[in-house]
Each structure stands twice: as structure tokens, then as C-alpha cells.
Length: 257
Length: 257
Picture 1: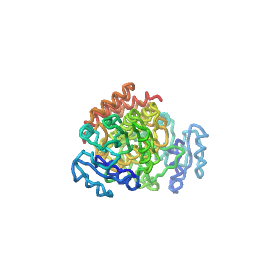
Picture 2 (picture 1 turned 120 degrees about the vertical axis):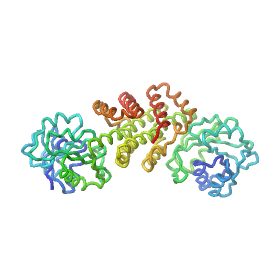
Picture 3 (picture 1 turned 135 degrees about the vertical axis):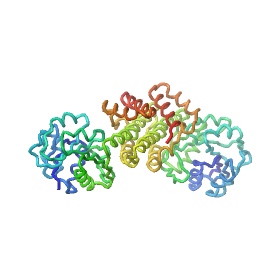
């Protein structure tokens, strides 16, 4: 059983710390957060972890440190952080390179590729873990931890993780925004977003079981110029939606694999 | 029981004709297709429908005609079509206005808002039907038909249906294309699309249970300029993906409801 400290008590730590303790692969020694209240909310779910607000871990018994903080807090936290000799530190970010931890000799990445909400139960079995470590023995430790939660374990370098993140921005963040636009267009005409939900579900179910470009449908791929022009006309009062419609249509028509 | 002829033997007719016959609300008299082979493939699933290749229905016993053909075949088919006196004709298109059928006195729209694939079983209970008719008694007939298949029945005018279709292009066709881009970026770096599927599923499950703009995540909404610039840098060799990234990011940041 590894003694582990969590630095950060946000959504990732909230789900990850209790899950790993439950598998009896770790025992959490400390949870750091900027406020004691935040840290305590998480330690209440753990066996014997202490809630702390200092980044000086030099006296900690932990041998592994899991950094689960917002991307924009990295530089400040890493600067202040004091770890015991010879400990391993990993971060859980999809965007940060492993090298941001190079101040510490043994370091790596322990990145669960999923968005977490505090209120929603997480099924770790379905979550791919992207692991990376400077040292191969440390990578083995990370595999040992992740392996208690999931069979989806991938050794992903920082450069690959960066590409993974760009593609997730397209597939998830931008997709979500297209739904926001669709919902907005419907609302402006007193139509219910519910109406197109079955169609969205079917689109998603197709995309998850086929190569996406092979199941492309709609006026753009059909080169149905009449419908495209009519749609652009309907969007004339929304220059941004108009521009997105035009550029996505062109991109669909020009797409080559 | 209404006597009904299907004009077109594509995916919509393929699912709709047997489903309505099974509910014993209609009896299909004829199935028209350009080739006898196509029409026969569908009539084999029906009680006593004849496969035909002529658009002259003047001697048909059918009282309702369901036009389920590709959008680009409309003008030619409508021009040639001969119907018996006093029959009702409806089309099943999401894009065509009801008025394209104005050559015929009694006309309307019977539009199941879903994409159909021949091989995939359809659960009509989940599909919204968008109905429209020139005459209110004809609308009642369409409601009577749709009511045997689903409780999601909506009276949608041609103008509304047009808006519905634009929004579906954003929410489904463009979304699919973003997935194609994501998959392409991953493939170029020998990463598996499987990796981000759990994240896509979670994104979709959130979007279907919340207002999409309220669950927007990612570097754009966080105004994480460093990540955005790094991503744009990574996309420099793909001018189209670069442009889409930039415009979607701006649109997320400017989005107001």
C-alpha cells in the first residue's frame, strides 16, 4: 500500500482519492487545499488523511504526491511545493507537459481522460488513464495504481497528450458549443431543444460505432447548394452562426482522409 | 384502415411502411420506385402492396400518398405524378416546404425527425413526428397515423421546420464533422479514436440533460489564452482546422443567451 498525498481537493481528487483507497492500493496521508474547508470536505471520505493548507510536505510520510489542481495554479503551487527526499510527484492535467514537474527528480503524469463533476458518480472502468513517467520504475508504479481502477491504460507522452487534448477540444468542447448554437436557434423560434435530441443521440451513436467521416450526412456532403444557400439566408442576422455554417460546410466538402 | 401508397422505397419508406401496417392503421396498396427491384424489396415486407415503376396513380385505390424520396428528386417526381381525385399527399422531408405539393389540393407534411439506416432497427416511440397539413381535417388524419407509432407529435409549420433543420445541421452534421476532424488529428499521430470516446459520451450525456451553454468547458470558455495559442500552433499545418479552432473559440467566448 502506497502512502499518497493529494495536492488539490477539486473534482479529480474528489473521485480519485476515495476510489484508490477503496482498492487498498493507497492510503491517503494528507489532502492539501487553499482552504481547510475544501480539504476537509474530501478527508471526510478518506480513512485517516489530514486536511492541510501548507505546501511544505518535507515532513510528510507520503511517497507519492498527486497534483490535481487547476492548470492556472500550476506555476504558483510548483514554486512553493516542498517534498520529502526521493518522493514521486505526478500531475493529472491533460494539457500540462510532464516537464513542468522537472524541479522534482522523480515525476510523471497520471491523467484520467474524462471530465468530472463533483455530484456525478464516476465509473473508472470506462475511463482511459494516460500515464507517463521520467523513470520506467515509476511508470510501473503508476500502472499498478491505475490498474486497480481500469483496464484502459495507455502510455502517452507529453507530445501525444497535447494532440489528444486538441482533438478532445474539437470532439467535445466545440461539439458542445454547436449544441448551444442549435438550442439558441430553436429558442429564438419558440421551438423546443427536446425535438432534436433523438436525432443528436442517433448521430452520436453512429459516430461512436463508425469512422465519423464515413457517416457524414446533411446538405454539405450532399452538395445540396439550394439548401445551403437557404440556410445561410436564414442565418443572416447572426453573423457568427453564418460564418460557422459557411466554414463547416466548406470543411466538410473539402475533407480528405 | 387507410389505403396508402408509398412513393419511394428508400430508408424512410423501408421503416415507416411496415411499422404503420403493423399497427393496422394502414394497408399499403402500392410502392413506387424507379426500379422494380427496389420496390419489390419493400413490398416483400408488406401484406399485399404491388411494386410499381409508374407515377401514374390515377387508377390507384389509395387515398393517402406518402412521398418519401430524396430532396433532389422532388421536382421531377411531382411534375410527373398523377393522383386519383380527392386524395391526400404528404411528403416526409425535413427541408422541403409544404407548398411544393400545392399542385395537389389536399397536401401536408409527415416528417419523422430522425436519420434512418436500412440495416438499423428503428424505435418509432422515440422519434418526434412533425406534422403539417393545409386542411385541419387532413392534419387530424396525420395525427391519427403518427399516434399509432409515437407520443412525440408536433404541429410544425414549414417555416418552423426550416429552422429546425438549420439547427439540426449544427447539432448533428457539423458535430459529426468535428468528430471526423478529431479522429483525423489522432490518426495523424497514431493515437486511437477509442481514447476519447468515453469523453465524447460524457459530453453528450451532459448536453442532453443540461442547457448546452451552461456545461461548456475547455480552454475557450476558461479564456486560457496560453493553451489556445499552443493549440493554434499545433494546427498550423492544417489551415482549415486552424480556422475552425479560431472561429469556434471566438464564438464560445462571445456567446450570449
